[in-house]
Length: 108
Image (cartoon, one colour):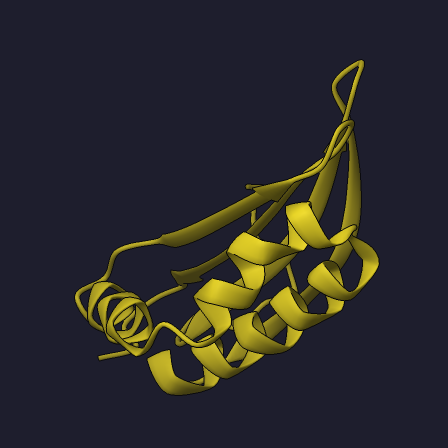
């Protein structure tokens, strides 16, 4: 995860998506401020859908499963509400996709 940009909110949550390719190249895909664990999870779901839409079916399957896993979504919301970072990773043959949400300040 990268440091928060100077303009990021100091209270709430910061969400990011990045791709990591061979040779340790990191490509920033997207980021978003969220004001609650629920809106952070909503952003993560949207980005997971975007990533899995680009993957071949065998590589997309874990993301498709995650999108419907309500127990995991509740675990993510609870972790964020307790001040923990939530990270989700998918991969294909050459690229690792990392999606995360983390508290930025006193969001609770």
